Amino acid sequence: MINSTISRQDKKEIIIDFLKQCNSYSGQMLDKYSTQLIQSDLEGAAVAKQKIHDWTTYREFNDYAIEELKGEQLDDWFE
Image (cartoon, rainbow, N blue to C red; front, side, top):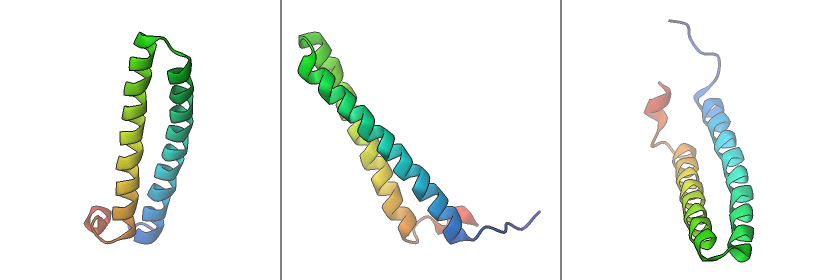
């Protein structure tokens, strides 16, 4: 097995940066569906509300994962 030259902390930072980029994208999607919600008919509004819920949940999950990565809870994943 080849030893990794990337430290555990660097690995965690790479993942955190990725999750932050995902959250940036989710923010764009939330803006998109918020605009659609305002401009939609009743059926379109229901779809937009579900999409807003889904993207909000996704972002909250990523935020939670980021906080766990900042601590030691997931360190054994990097062994």
